[in-house]
Image 1 (spheres, rainbow, N blue to C red):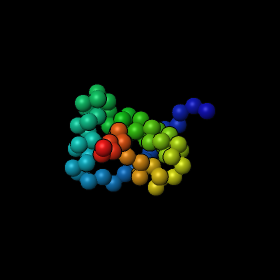
Image 2: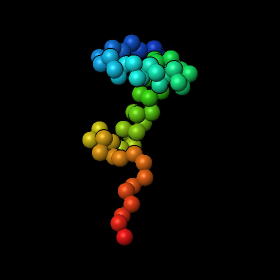
Image 3: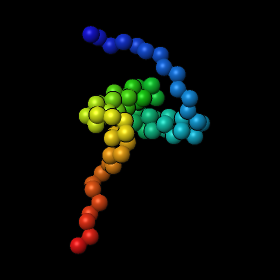
Image 4: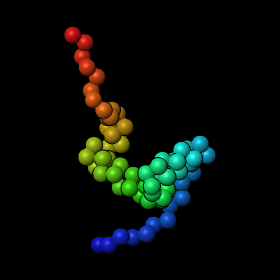
Length: 68
């Protein structure tokens, strides 16, 4: 199977790009490496959720505590 190199073009606003690059630097990764890892992880999450709508509606973190 192997690994294929694929060129992708994304349109990002400047603020997002700066913030993304800063996170990549903080993680000691190149932006393209971090983007690749996030893409692979997010696709795995999408497969588990079953649809993009269900994935986007899922809230991260602990569920809200119910009032007693």
